[in-house]
Each structure stands twice: as structure tokens, then as C-alpha cells.
Image 1 (cartoon, rainbow, N blue to C red):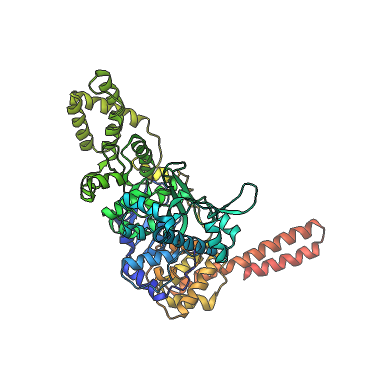
Image 2 (spheres, rainbow, N blue to C red):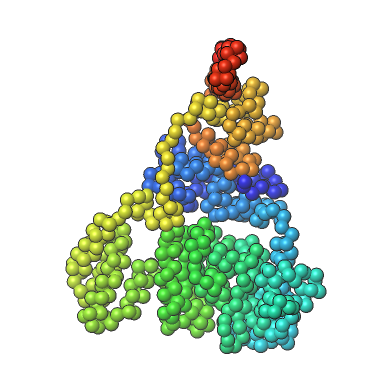
Length: 606
């Protein structure tokens, strides 16, 4: 089941659909080409090399004949960005400056009192730690450290930075006084327990506290940085009901508006880097949670952006980490640029040393392509003044250049390599072409060899050949197609057939249609789909809407389809009677068998 619509007013949903044309919405993610009255492209939800993803501008819906996904513009945004219905409506309403009542658009979930209590405990804890940092003697050393690092009061407030004092039970007492369940707080990662199973203790002690928010802005975890020396330098909250570090990005809740506008994410390694860069003007920056980038992170970023600018530390460890994230981001179809920091500095250090303006100009605007970055990175492994070093470096970088699809791009890098190493351009080009030929020979068959992201994200699967549907199934689909186009057709079917469809999903769609028209609404497939509460029904409506149907319906055509539908219960009854007749014959009750035979003849005449 899809998320319910909550209390979002129908007029808001209608306004969102009015303002978000399906072609414009889909075109942000899929390259569409016109084919008659349809637009077609490669499906973003599964791997394919022949376009089966179809958009119908006239009906404002999409449908994929390969994987069966379908719906209107809101449904597309839900699927592509992993949003609930209220979240998608809220995001789309904000983009079109449509007013949404307060409190709507949050993630739809079943009532979960324990989760809600835990969220409240985290919110109070964040406020408590922030207060201790700013207003008490306990937080003075932490405040001095932050100011020394260049953190302004404005940034400390905006990012709600706090301090956990070097005591064992300050937070325990704070939560107890506010009647929070300490066992729940321990399960949720705020507290810990003595190893002997005794008292509850504060999990974080003598650490600068960075609250971690979910993308709607609720505090769900903390990262605590130790003051002074010691290990671990950063201590994260454990995973809990609220927090999954492989799906969470630091600062995403504040960066989302800028990301939506620019379609770009700047990916940092640390919380301090995100905060310093924000003050320098980078308001689309996020960081992973003290862990390596995961496929989940990459997929999440793909739902929001077209490009990721990787801005990791300038030391060898940071650059090696940047090399590792390139294939992960490429596999989901993101464009990638890499910031190259000099002197082994991290972004925070660079900003403090050279200032915000130089950081924006040199590091952010000067970010290089992944190919250029790989050449710079691999160069450090070789002594290029020696012949052996030149040869080894060339052997490493030529396959990287050879895989580039653009001959112009390959030539630019080969000329640069030729000039830098003082090697013949022609010989480098010949070696590069031989590598390309070898690669093409070894290229596996399958979908999207030129689009690695589609293969990487969606495993190739066999799409079965379409089967011929029984006459009654086709009849029911044709009836629904005509009913979707015309309220009178729906009324005609309701009077003569009602809910007597043989397929449960068809009966449910018909019931929704009768109710939709009973409210005086006019035919509009996209708006009708917003009244459904079931993913499967939405897909079925999308599929039915793609049928080629005449614009005008006739009573004869409706009657023919109704007759096919009504035949099925009779045919099933006949089959049942035939089984009874055979059973009677086998048991020697020939009189009973003859009676059943006459009943079968009567049914067949009907």
C-alpha cells in the first residue's frame, strides 16, 4: 500500500498536478523523444536498451511496459526520489509557490508512540547540550576550541552544536526529570548501561556534539568530537529505530533547497568541513556519518541531484577515499567532479588559511573531471623523470582515457599526456585505440553497455513476452478504459454491471470510479489516480490508460464487453456442473448424471 494522503486538501493536490506537467517532471530524469502522441525513453526504474517507458502528455501519466510502473507526476516524484505522498506533494507545492497548510508533508507512518517519544528525547537532548555549550562554565573550553577553529556564534546556533560534559549522569538526570523512559533512551542510543547491568550512564562525555537530523529536520542521532587527544576522535550514536548511518547524510535537511535549485551536491568527509563551507557560501554541502559512502547514499543523492562535487581532504587518505567513491556515484548515473586541495589540507583548514573567496574560486569552481583527477592521483605513484616511471604511469592511465566515449575528450587528455611526458602523440593514440578495441571485444551482451549506471543500479532481468489475455479480461480492461474517458460510460456500466467484474483489481478501480464521478468530477486520469490508495491499482490504471481506444464509445461496444464479463460466472458454473456429472457417472448414478446434463444444456443456451 502506498502512503495515505493524510489531510492534504484536494485543492492542493489538484494545484500541484496543474502546475507540474508530466513531460517537464519526467524530463528532469529521463531523456524523452516524441513518438506520435506519446513520449518515450529508457526507464529509470529498471535496465533496458529499448525504450519502453512511455509518457502520455494528453492524459498526464507515465507507464513502463517493461517493469509496469506507472502513475501521474506526483507518483513519478515519489518513485524517483523515494518520497511519501505527503512529502512529494509538499516538495512540488513549494517548487510552484503553492501554499500547503502547516504540519503537512512529513513522512507518513503508522502511529508509533515509542518512536515519537524517542524523537522528543533527541530534540530535548540537542537543546540541552547546546545550552550547556553556550551558557555554562562546563562548555567554556569547548566554546574556546570552536572559536579558535573559526566557528562563529551564528554557525554554532544554525547547526545547533552543543557540549556533553565530562560527567557520568548529567543527561540521565535531565531525561529522568522530564519523565523519559531511560530504557527507551538507552535502546535509542542516548544512554548506555554499566557492563554489570547496573545504572544507566551518559553515552557521550566531554565531547563537542553535532546533532544529526533526518531530511525533514528532526534530530535522530549525534556525532561527538573529543576535546583534546584521545580515541575515537568522533563517536557516533549507534544505529537505532531512528538512525541508519548508511542512509543518512549530515546537513541534508538544510541543504535540500539549494540542492533542488542547483541539482548539485557537494560531498564532504567531515561535519566541520560542511559547516565551514556553508559559511563560505556552499549551502548544498553534505557529509557521510563517519563511514564510507554506500550504495544507499549514492542512490539517495541521485534522487535529488544530477552532479556530485566530491570535496575530500587533500592528504593521501582523503584522495584515496575520493577515488573509491567515483565508481559508486557513476553506477547510479551521477556526473562527478572532484575538488583538488593542495598541501594536504582539508576544506575547513583551507578556508581558515586562504579564506572563503579563494575556496569558492579555486576549489569549488576549479573542480576537475574524474579522468583528470585520476591522472593527478596516479601520477603521485611514479617518478616521471625516469623512463621506467613514465612507462608504468602510461600503462596505468591509458585504459582510463581509452574508456571515454568522446574522441575529442580522449584527444585532449592524450595531447596533455604527450606534452607532459614528452612522448609521441601518435604512438599514445595508437596504444589507446588498441586498448579500446580489446575492451569492445570483451564487452558483455546486455542492456545499456553505454549506460553503466542503469546496469549497476538495476540488475538485468528477463522481461517475459506478453501473453494473450482471455476475452473477459480484455473486455474488463476495455470497459474501464472507456469509463476513465467518459462519466456517462461509467454510469451505463454501473447500472448494468455494478461491481460484478471478475478480477478483483478491476472491481476496485470501478468502485473508485463510480465514487469519483458521484462527486461531480469530470474525467481526468491523472487526478483520478490521486484518489487511489494502492500502488497496484495505480499501475493497473496506468496500463489500461495506455490502450488505444476510440474517442467516442458506443452502447453496442459497452454491451459486447459487459456480455463477455457476465459470461465468466456462467462458464465457471458449467465447468463445475461438468465435474459433478463426471463424478456421478463414475459412482454409477446415471439418473443424476442425466439431470446434470440437462442443466448444462440450459446453462449453455443462456
